Image (cartoon, rainbow, N blue to C red; front, side, top):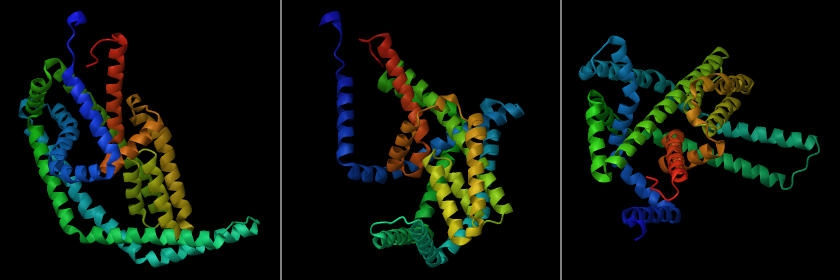
Length: 373
């Protein structure tokens, strides 16, 4: 053969298998997603352990540096970090969750009233349209369709809330998996270098030294991306939720804590989450105390303005300057596979994919006939 070049049979086979998997996924999405979600549950504690180790490692290092602890004897720093984190979780469970459950219970009792209020608002809207001589074709059918849609979805929310409270077995299993993973993550934090070295050795055995080093370096960079992004979003979301909570409590807006938690969780998801949480929060106040809805609207607008122009630019890094199209697409794709967590982690995963794209493109531009790996 010319130049004594070897045919990369292994790479051709791997690429072929990858295309087959992608084709199977696109053709039988429902079946693949069911199987995927069923078996991913067995690895949930391991995933919790990895996330615990990744996100608590920077805190452990800061404690070591601040108190001048030796890295070889880091158990005191790990103990302090784990203890503070557990206290935060316990405090959240005993202080915040009961208030949220109480708010959800009140909402559950108000569902008939909410449906009645929605019907009144629809009547007012159609009356206003008639006042301005705006005729709608099939007005009665349209009004009936909207009312049926709202009732159907409110019923689904009510049923979900009912099963959410009753399904204690599922929650017990989920919490148990979390604490098992948290314990395993704490063990990793005691000697992270050992686990990194073990993973590095496995990569070298499977892929060879050069490619193994490249994969490990890429994984380390992805880890830094994820910590920077998730950490920034958590801080920004806490500040945004704090603003909403402060304004709504001062104005005595109903469901202040529940709305703040919705904003906190929603703000972790770019674009989609903020819009959804804001609309739901305003809707809850609108059907409960319409006179206070202006305060909820002001609180959300103020929080989002500060997040977009003050908090976000100070926390966000230039590494995450990705076009909105790709961000929204990654959120939709991540949400379809992993649910809310997939939507939250979609952007850092997208950043990692972009790094791979840049690396392959650079290699190809440097040597068109060369090995991009």
